Image (cartoon, rainbow, N blue to C red; front, side, top):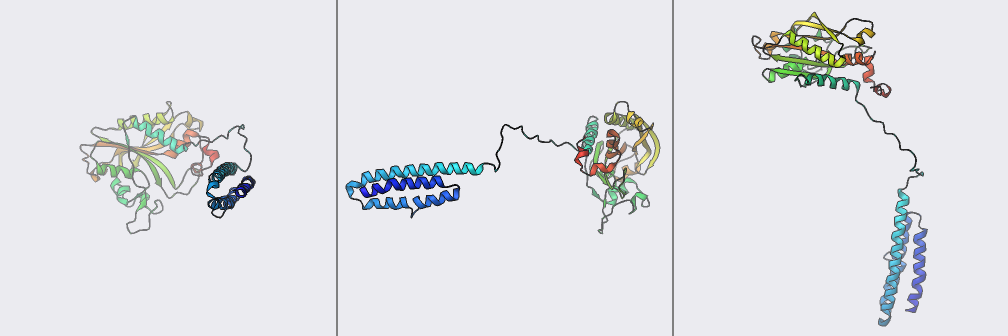
Length: 335
């Protein structure tokens, strides 16, 4: 017993020193195995307990257990210290320094204008409708009373896809008018904001893809007066209360009569002009109603559409439409 007890204290000190000397978790695990592993020095000492005389075992066992508890406590403490050290950043952190400012994102200017357009129409009871950007000629042209020889149907103006069905990228959101009227009976009161495509070369005022919003109202007794009142309300909401509207006769295949809409306000006068063209509109052509199964003797309606980019350019004084698509944060941060 005396020999075993004499070995216990130096062995314990050696284990404690080895744990303290470990400068990383792998070194600590190695030291643990050296003393507490299956073939460890302290484990071997414990195995010798059974060879002692019966009367010496209680005292020796008590001493060995006390040493084991001390060693395991030291091992746990050193492991926690090394784990904390490993979790520290490589460079010192000054917790008294000011925090870093997180930059908040903003809505794209086209999104802001679209939201304002939707908000103005919703105030008049309009619902928002949507439709596919890859369309067929029936919904994009035929049902809208667009003749086969119309320039808009030429491959130089429209993106056609090279498949036997000859689908196309929609040239206007008016195609959604046909889809909605084909699926539900009147009355109809919808707006259709969305992306459209034209075969234009990109320059300051044109882009092959841009955004439109279409408005459609169908009911009994709808007149041009209803159209004019709606247009005036929406554009005053978008462009200011000083906005004035005028209609000029025009031609569209899917409306009769048809009009171009001009507006005037302080923004237009800053550009050195009295009036600026902003949209096209008209009363829905009777043939369009027949194409979707509406009786033109019972139902009347109007439709109008305009470019969202054009509204944004006038509203914010932007001279080049391409700025909307370049994702330059110096530009986008201004809105």
